Amino acid sequence: MPPVSEAPFFAVIPGAQVHQVLEGRHEEVVRIVEAAYRLHGSGDTVNPPSYFLRFPDRPDSRIIALPASLGGTGGDRVDGLKWISSFPRNVAAGIPRASAVLILNDPDTGYPLACLESSIISAARTAASAALAADVLGGARGQRPRRIGFFGTGLIARYIHQYLAGTGWTFDEVGVHDLSAEHAEGFAGYLEQSGASGRVTVHDTAEALVRDSDLVVFATVAGTPHVTEPDWFAHHPLVLHVSLRDLAPEVLLSGANYVDDVDHCLKAQTSPHLAEQLTGGREFLDGTLHDVLAGKAEVPDDRPVFFSPFGLGVLDLAVGKHVYDTLLASGELAVQEGFFHEMRRYG
Image 1 (cartoon, rainbow, N blue to C red):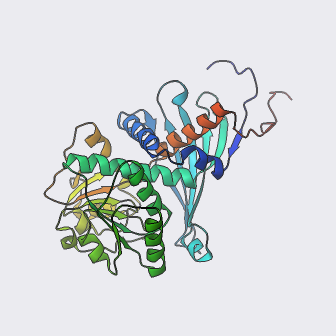
Image 2: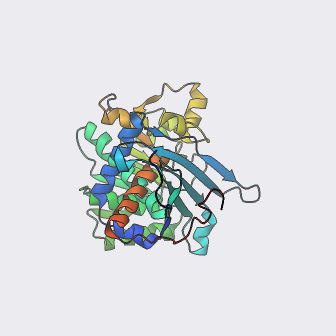
Image 3: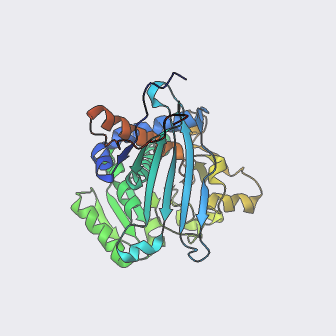
């Protein structure tokens, strides 16, 4: 490690600056996420298990710590921690369910470099991951689906739609379903105002949405499986199972299954974890997204295809480091003067 010639500095990056850097740069963010997946697949990351802080008096809420280290060359290396909360009751109070911060650490000194508002980063990396998976898995099947259905209509669904549209996807039909009719209508209104391609339909039932969609996006807050009928997927759609706990094991076992990281995804009572418990093994998995990217796994077209991403901390680091570097280069980084106070060993 080179000698430290001056005290490190620490920056605070608010959501407005994060939005400024990422807005409209969908293809760039997808490339950043793909590069992080490739680094992870090659073993050039550290991504320990996430830690769940749960509350006996608030069983529907949680805060998750995702520590990670992203390898690479030169200035791309970074360590850090994502700290993200999910409090579903926030929605009734008129504020978003999830909130988050991301801490970036210097890999040479360990000193924290910055604290970033990270709900936008989390949504962007999730949406970029979904768009990448749709492109890679759908492309491997020979063509892009023309009918999409959104089950769940919150922030993540909106970002996934934006990232699909921002990377060239168009649709003939867009379906919407939510347990809240108000939220479903609100999302349909957003789609129409955004100029989304295709006819927008609000479906009264989950079955109708799934059967009428060739690309299905699950972006709910479900804690246990609620979609239990494999027959709904008999037309072999591509399913982005982003919320991880919507599908019964029997549904997953009816198709081909891909995850972002096997060990991470098969825990915490996710649908793939339940499928592992039901079958007694992991043979039902057909590979990871990196396996498909690297040509190590094929994608069938004669059964449904499910992508169930747990969400890796290295993706947040990659996008967060991009935001940090962009603001540093532009001179817009808000440095907190004197943040580190005791910098002399003996005072």
